[in-house]
Length: 150
Image (cartoon, rainbow, N blue to C red):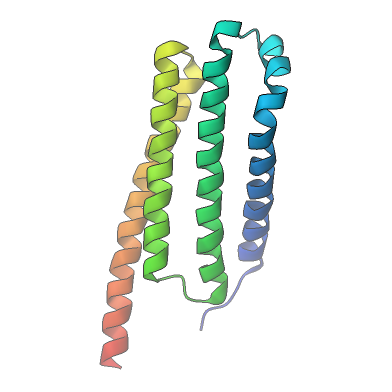
């Protein structure tokens, strides 16, 4: 019997909050950009590139949080080992790879150490999601095989 934990609910609440905060942050990028660029000393010729970088990576991050919301719904329903979660993990891996590609392009134009760290983090997250996807796929196979023998 699967027992739901308070940690599951708290994590779901955190993912929900981050999802809505991410949407607000994406919507605020065009409006807050001039102030942020002046504060951080980013040249006007790079402003459009930075806005596009922030928007694309923000949208990808919100998409990752959306997929996590879908996974947590199945977890709280008590049946996380389903094919839909395998698909969600693959989509999360693609979104992580997209973010790392976006920041690799940024690294070519505006090289910083933090950009290199972001690339490394999201490449590792991509690999982690692909590994979890395969684990979920294998567990679904075992679960289905077990259900057939009982």
